[in-house]
Image (tube, rainbow, N blue to C red; front, top):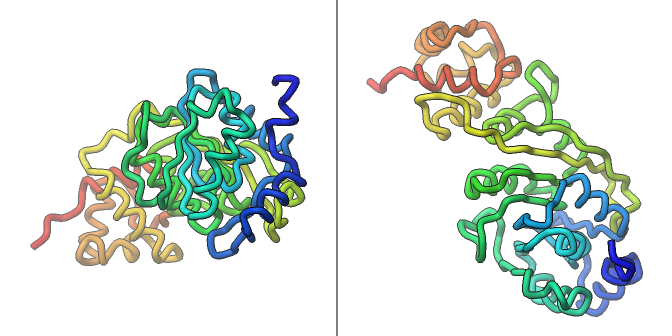
Length: 289
């Protein structure tokens, strides 16, 4: 870190002053909680393992707390921001605080769920304090749309972090766990206290690390076909797979046949299966009559 690092990163007073100048009040609707602690953003960058040659994409940069720390460490940073006021203000914040790196920064004013391309070189890493109300869909969309993202570190609600990183058999293992596992090896990477945010949320936060798999599970089924089985299995998670997959297969008997062919007990439940097992079931979906 440079000797001027403290001047570059945003502290609590900087955040409040910037927000007041812009007339910004964080909104629950968009799940906005701004990080006001420089040590926390440094920790996120460090935990993410951001390298000098990385092209980082950040979703929901807000006022730029994490953006500035990423820009110091990476080759380039592209921030995706949906909020009109925040999107308009961020380039000026970067220019004022890191003028020597401003040409390495790009802003995409858009809903991250609708982003299909990014300017400049392909991203190699995703690092973000994700808006909590759309964290999982945004994460899965970005991993799907940008296969060059090798490493991801996201800050999400603690409960969501647990779900994403859960292993088969866990009580919180579910759709986010299995779909994330399609793309990456997922693990919890730490906890974040409430007092580093403004406003302080009424939930705890957690860091989740995702390292992309060399390739998705080997299967003749498409990703969408596998995800359809996952969705069906967990839509009625208390039911056996024979019952839960009846609609997907066309009948309970057809579901049982598909499960048996995949080497899975029809009496098992979705929470016991790996992503590879869901793929095996998807391969054996009966042909439509």
